Structures are given as structure tokens and as C-alpha cells.
Length: 280
Image (cartoon, rainbow, N blue to C red; front, side, top):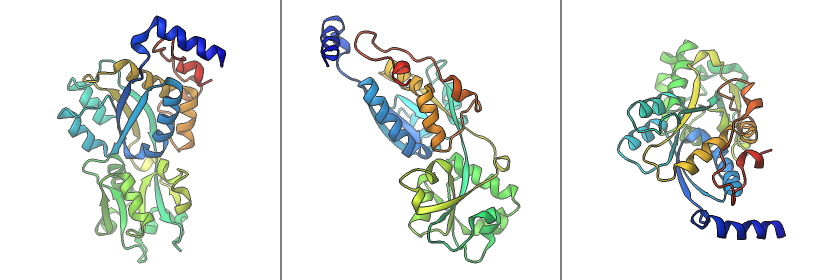
């Protein structure tokens, strides 16, 4: 406790400008809703800065950011949307980061009598009248779901059963509420503590849809670029790479990426702990 007080006093003397915490605004794909809520809480505790999270479909955020939406960071469910923003000059140079690879599951409500292990062919069952997916017009998980259905050779047969959620989180809500009999959603949602008891899932073969390589960028318009970089570095730490894996994500660079982590920056050497050290 004494060391903390001394460090705080030194901070007041040496760098009063940085004593006040900053707030960063993060636009994140809805498959990150549960894990990023935990990531943000850990970051706030370790850095002293605040994180305001907004969740939605990657494509909708892409359009908003092109029109000047006031976010500091954007984390998409694919790499194409952030890459296009970067190429158009909306991203901070060199700040594009592939942070994870997502996975798709067939998800059934807990009270369903259907066998999820039948895989996608289950959707042909007469008992399945509605199948929820994210809107493929602007949601990468919806695009992946359509690709998986086509790969299984059943898209034309189940097309009339499809109901579209605004994003993959809403597609999961349709199933959980009984408004759909099954859904193709993100594994990260199906295994989250808040949702896993509400259903059961079958992992859709990953070779049946394009890889969901997920990436993020720091926006060039951000007024808090140093804190934004700090948050991006935090995602590279072994602690958070491991947390992402608990939610079903695979490191974008493969399994070995989880062992290496990343080199974190120190936002203020005299008043903030190194996030790299704090995560050990």
C-alpha cells in the first residue's frame, strides 16, 4: 500500500498531464460481445483507462466509419472490412492486426429433441422450420453460414427456412427465444457463460467456409491513439490470447501464436503498469 501511495505521488509530480484516465471507443463485431466485455474489464483494471464498447455487424460499422463515426478502434469479424478502411486512408498506418480466427457452429436450443451431431443435414428435418443466420449482406458470419450450406449441398433446400439477424448475436437470440429452431452462429457465443446452458452445438467443418480471419485497426481519426495502441497490444498478451481461446477463437497466426504473445507498450513509465508485465 505504501508503495502504491508513493508511486501515485511521484506520478502527480512527474506527469500530471497523464494522471487523468482516457476513454477509448471500440466498435466490435457482435461475435466478440462476451469475450470483449471481459477483455475491456481487465484492460480498465490494469491500465486505469476506460473502454466504451459498441457491438454490431462488421459491415454496418464499416459504413458508419466511412461516414466519420467517432470510434478509436474497429474489430471486425473478417479482415476485408478493416483492410478496405486501411486502404482508403481511414486507418492508422501499420495498425492493422489479425487478432483471431472465428468458427461457426450449428446451434440448437436446449429443449430441442433434435440431434445436433447430425450436422448440417439436420436442417432438412421437417421439424426445423426456421434457421437463423446473420444477414450475409453485411455480416461475415452470415456469409460463412451461406458458404457452409452451399458446401453441404443443402442451401437451395433450406433457403426458404432462413431468417436473418442483424448480426450473429441477434441470430443466436432468435434461437434462444424460440423464434428459430436452429441457427448457424459463432462458437464464441455458443460457449460463452451467459449462453452455453441455453443450447448445444455442432462444430461446422472449417473447410466448408472461407476462413474467418478477424482483424482490427486503429482509426486515424482517433484522439486517443496511444491508449488505442495500448489496447491493441493488450490483445497480443498471452493472458488475452488464452482468454480468446477459451471462447473458441484460434490465434490468427496458428497455435504457436499463443505462446509468443506480443511486445506491449508502456503508456506512461511513471504512473501506469506495463500491460505486458501485468499480464504475466
